[in-house]
Length: 118
Image (cartoon, rainbow, N blue to C red; front, side, top):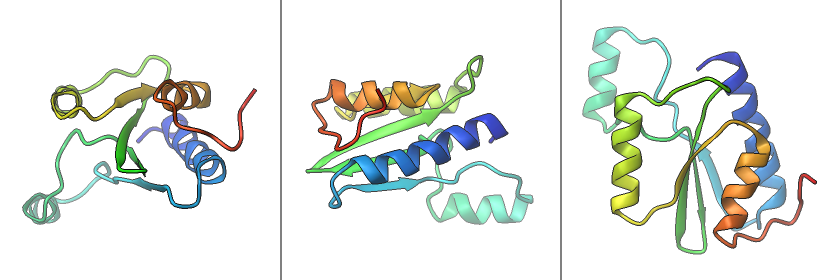
């Protein structure tokens, strides 16, 4: 993950863990990174799936996927395929390029945030 995307994701995790109720689960899915072929094959066998969003939020029986991208970043084919599968399953998913995007996405689904950015 590029540095700007990594910084945004880290800031979003801090914000969400402070703003969401304590029962919420916010966690990263570290699919990226460099691995040798043997390690990549082992992880795939264990269930790692290309395209899964960077961050998942679980709250009150609902799941939300957030993929972080730099301002000009684009989705890979695998990420678009997963986005489509999330939609097919009724799971909200978004691309976030700022903390405001994260906040707008969740409030758009009537998620109550205990802290607001603005």
